[in-house]
Every structure is written in C-alpha cells, then in structure tokens.
Image (cartoon, rainbow, N blue to C red; front, side):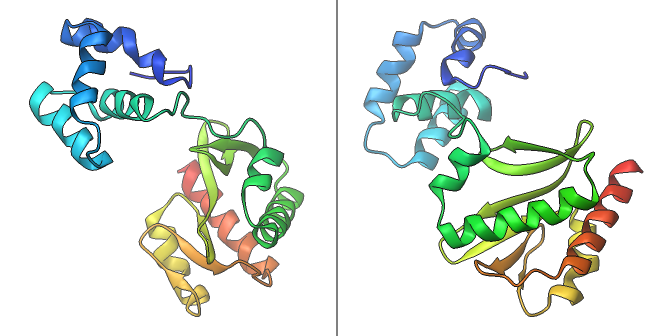
Length: 185
C-alpha cells in the first residue's frame, strides 16, 4: 500500500480494517511492549499479529513519539541537521552533478537528499558521524566503480567518503552518467 501522507496516522485506517481492532487496542498492545527495543516491538507485531512491516513501523514509531516519517521539509532543513563540513561537501557534490545534469530532480526522500530522473532514483547521499555515504542505487554500479574508490570504504550499495572529501568531479560525473544509463535500461 502506498501512503502519500507522511504521517504515521495515515496507516491507522488500514490497520483497523485489516486487523479488525480499534487503534486503542493497538495502543494498549504497545503499552505492554513499552521498554522493549524497536526490533523486538516490530517482531512482536509481525509474528503475533501478522502486521506488515509498514504497519508495524507506523504503530511502533507513533507510539515512540514520531508522528511523521518526514524529518525535513526542505533541503536547508536537512543541511541544518548535519555537520557544517558535511553540508558543505554535500552541497558541492550536488552542485557539480546538477550543473552537468540539470534534468535530475533534487528531492528529500527517506530523509536524505536524492536525485531522480523522472520516477527513478539515480543517486542518494546520507551522513554518519565520521563519513558521507553516496549511493548510485545500483549495486552492480558500485561494484564496477569500487576500484576507483579503493581508498574509501566501499560497501555493497554505498561508498563511504570522508566528510571533507576533495571531490573528484570527473569521477563523480562518470558515476552519475553510468547511473543514468543503468536507469534507462
């Protein structure tokens, strides 16, 4: 089920319909699970009550005080939430990419900056305390480009870069060009 409304409550009518119990019943269940870790709460709802991942996540996160899946309303909001060095590096990365590929749409998805071509995600960026992760949304592509990023941490779907990465524009644009080609296949 696609839920366009980012609020956790948007899932509640479907939860009530599918499971035949009021939301108060489910809040009572969550009350009994209070103090358990997130994975335990999710697992309980999925195993005992046959909740989908989306419904379990909506109920658990709502019960924990998160009323919306969206943390940021805009890119500036996102930048304010991260280290200034990371923000500077990410702004530079996106400026280089969008300078060459202005048709790519810059959006916030999964609470991170992403570049889309029509309805397909091409490239995403996220941050951790000590690094920036870039993701071309294609694990084959990450593997293909791994030798060019060998001095960095290359995972299955992401490439970890230092927060103050001295951007290799040519390499970055080659990666984006390849990601666009893969997306068009």
